[in-house]
Structures are given as structure tokens and as C-alpha cells.
Image (cartoon, rainbow, N blue to C red; front, side, top):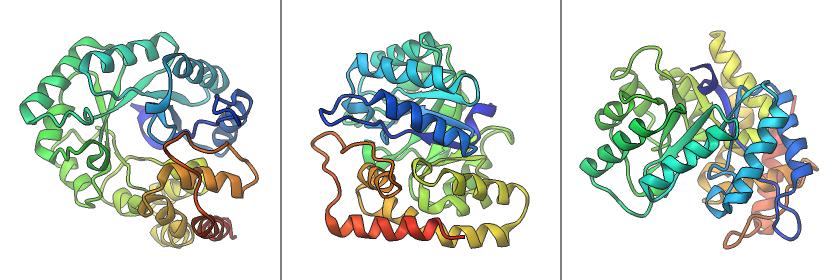
Length: 294
């Protein structure tokens, strides 16, 4: 599906001083990344602190983003949950509000075994109509689905794309051998984007594209054009920022800090997360500066 390829941005959720959603800033941010050339956006995912949102806040995010996007790019919604029924309900609600797809991790905290996990996906697959991207993220769910089992899940109806975030650079080429050639596989580990593109990824779910969207789009386009020399040069320039986001354990906070460095503050994260300390902010500032050099 076209809406699940290219650079797809899991949007930061802008918060006001009282931790409510800053709708005006959200509108500006959605326009900003679309104008940079991204191919899709995701609201209420982990980068957007989706697990901290009330149902009414999720609805506000979805409605606003769908309205602002106005068909220019596809809008997906993070619909992960512990409970299968809740996943289905969130996907159905996203469809009602105009989203064109959902994204789900494996159920977190529950630690289902493989039989339970396959049953979960069979249930979701059979009960939803909206296309869904399945997200393998062992760092946050405690489950690392191996390629063979992942491919079985991806053969189910309505489960139409995969985001791979195990940190293992071999996963995309291994999955590519197990699914149809046209099946969308997307990188979910920012500091492996070039490696995953070369390994067969069709896109990149790039949280860092909140901060450096044009650079992420340029990297995708360079690889698509076969210009690996140009891609390597750009990758070196943005790699410091990718590393700050991916390897500090402060992914949400770093992307908020990066926007602050750019003069586009989106507020602090919701507790228990806190804004980055001075040392990490200094590193983020240097990384953003390096990524924006010409």
C-alpha cells in the first residue's frame, strides 16, 4: 500500500504548559512535515506518547490531523494495547475518524507466547476493516517476533505492512525472503535506516523526521535513485542525531528537544518522562546543527 511506504512520521504530540494538547502547534507541525515531503504520518504512536492519551485526546489528535492533512498524505493511528478487544476498538475508532490505517505493536506487558500472539493477530485480522501495520519492537513489548513467525502474521488479511525495530540489521532481508516482493517492510530503527534500505526496506517510520524531515526524505530518494554515494554522505551528516535519538534511551525526549533547538517548541513530555538534562540538550543541539549543514 502506498500509504505505508516511504518516510512515515510518528508525530510528536505538542503539549501546552498545562499538559493539554496544543492544537495550534499540532496544526503547524503537521503542515511542516508534509511540506518537507514526507509520505505519511502516524498519530498517537509511542513517539507521540500515545499510551498517555485519554480517548478524547486521541480523537482530537486524529480529527485534527486528518483535517490538516486534507488528503495530502495518509494518516495512520497508533492502536496498540495490552488487550485484543481494545486494539480492535481503537482501530475501528480510527477508521470512523477518517484515518486510512493503524499501527500496532505486540501486546505489551502481557508477554504472550507464540500461540497466544498468533491468536491475537488472527482475532485482530478477522475483526477490523482498516489496513494495519504490525510493529516488532522488543525493547518496549518484551517480545521479539522472529522472521518466520512474523511472516505468518503478515500473511493474515488486513495486516498489510511491517515495521521492524529489533535492532538486528538482518531482519529486513530475512523477512524479504519470506513475504511477497511487493509487501511493504519499513525500518523502525533510526540509526540503521541506510542499512535497512539497502537490505530491502520500502520505507522508514522515522521519529527523527519530526526534527529533520527533509533530510529523511532526501535519504530515501537518494537510495531509490541508486545514488549510494550521495546517500552515504547524507547519512554521515545526520547520523549523530539518529544516534542521539536511538541510543540514549530518551527517544521521545530527544525529539522534543530537537524541535526546541529548531525554535519550534512542542512542550515537555508527560510524566513520568522529563525534559532532557543540560548535557543531553547540548548534544542534541550539536547533532541538529550537524544534520542541517549544507
